[in-house]
Image (tube, rainbow, N blue to C red):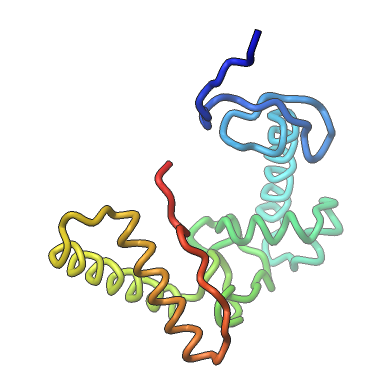
Length: 174
């Protein structure tokens, strides 16, 4: 008797071990942490937020010492915008570097200048894609993305002087 050939079904739940506690759980959307640990983390975040509200003007170091929060958790909370002025929960000295230029920011991943540059680049790429669609309407979107990626890769190679080889089929139908 042979094995059944089932198609790759990416939306099926997967059984894995929790990255924090090691408990086995069912991951529906690629989660790495079990629901119990997520709940504990949310409760811990509430503890941090309530401490900050009760002690306005606290420094990051003060908050970490008083609540037991670690640096990694505090940075994640900052990136999620929990300590931004608009949230009403602010901590003195809660800045970290922009991923692109290194300028100090208080929330998100990029500073406003880098974010506007990324938006312009995305807009230009969308316009270029529309032009290419008019040139060759029979070409699939995946083929267009691969051609654009290859051209951009070659342009970067020319500008940087590198001689790396482009991997064909960067984008694939799923």
